[in-house]
Length: 231
Image 1 (spheres, rainbow, N blue to C red):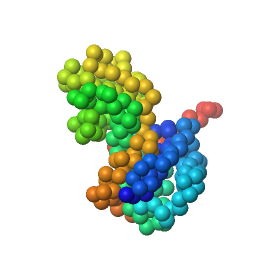
Image 2: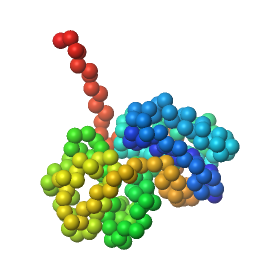
Image 3: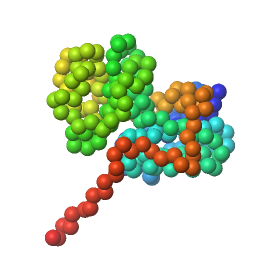
Image 4: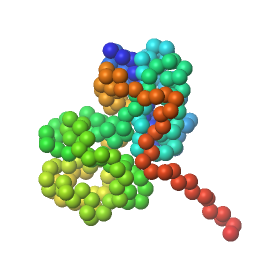
């Protein structure tokens, strides 16, 4: 079984987790927004130190690959690639929405077998990054940037119970209103939920090219220019 460091930075929460011989040993998280660049390496150092593990003992690094926060993803991927280069180990990429769905299932394993999972990451205004998964975490609708309106997900609203969660879900609850829609609070993508996903990919050798891998942003980054207060 592999020793895998997991890194999740796609939203405001920054988290890391360590799996030794395929089992989750420990995890750490930082919930302060916009602190990934300051906190991530410290979290990793603390995590490895607590477990008495060095980077040389790792077999792989798994990182959330997007979509999500442009800056957060770049930081997570850059740090992950640096560790992989230094230790000569493979990189595993995990879609952020799949990680979010995996964390939901860990907390709510009791949901119906036919249920759909709709993880949502906020993409500003009334737009979200979303996908649809079944309970086996098989993708039933691919990742997309969706503008939420009264017609969103109309084709599934009464067909199957659907669970909406993630930091993009609250702003959708008043628009997607029907008896088959359930909005669940408090679910974020976490590194601890990446462990079984990373282990499965490690077993089949599904690795990324460390030199060329880039996050899946889905949308182009748009920088804003601060307004001049004096004109």
